[in-house]
Length: 229
Ligand SMILES: C[S@@+](CC[C@H](N)C(=O)[O-])C[C@H]1O[C@@H](n2cnc3c(N)ncnc32)[C@H](O)[C@@H]1O
Image (cartoon, rainbow, N blue to C red; front, side):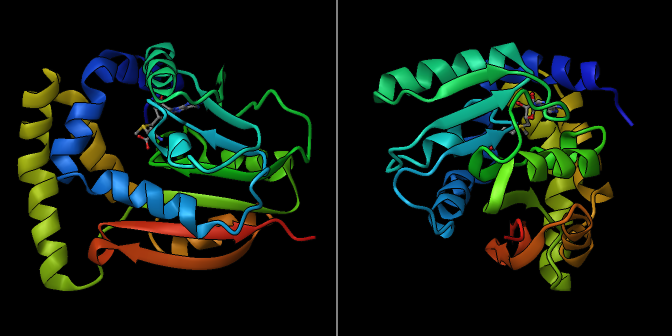
């Protein structure tokens, strides 16, 4: 398992080319998945939203209709610099916070929703992260986790496995100039719990799992859960 500073350095290293690589490696699907996450949450227009492991800000910025406080948190300074620039270009004004997802610098019960896209797998202790998300959510608040999964349907699972193991490290290395993060990506996706196993972790942290929605045949999955009232 990698240590937190190694993860942070890894994302700092690829930050400048992170967005471009995402678009090419997912053929643009990543933006659609994040928008779907934003649309799936039944939030009021003035809801307060915390996007953990916000990276270059794409998932937080997909809540473009939101009028409430939007906070994007990440421990990679370079990723946050990208997020800040992108938000400015779009005329959006979220609050960007440089901090560790395992020690959120917020009081208990202040957010209506916590979202995390492709970030939970990167935490050195994902369950501790889920506990932190639970703490900062108000009773009745929503959690949305977007994460890669391995498709259940065998032929598609084989095809995605081929892409993950053979093509992704090469293409990721070519697009960013760094192959190691994409080796890490393929290993971490395969080692991380999927579907009901991740839902069980979410439940273990105190949430009521509400839905599990495989996307693009299960290449990614959206998990929704609620903090009990
Ligand atoms: C794969 S990126 C996902 C970024 C963004 N959510 C997206 O959808 O593109 C994972 C992000 O998690 C951040 N991260 C990993 N561990 C973290 C931690 N313990 N605290 C804060 N950020 C963390 C990394 O810096 C990186 O920006």
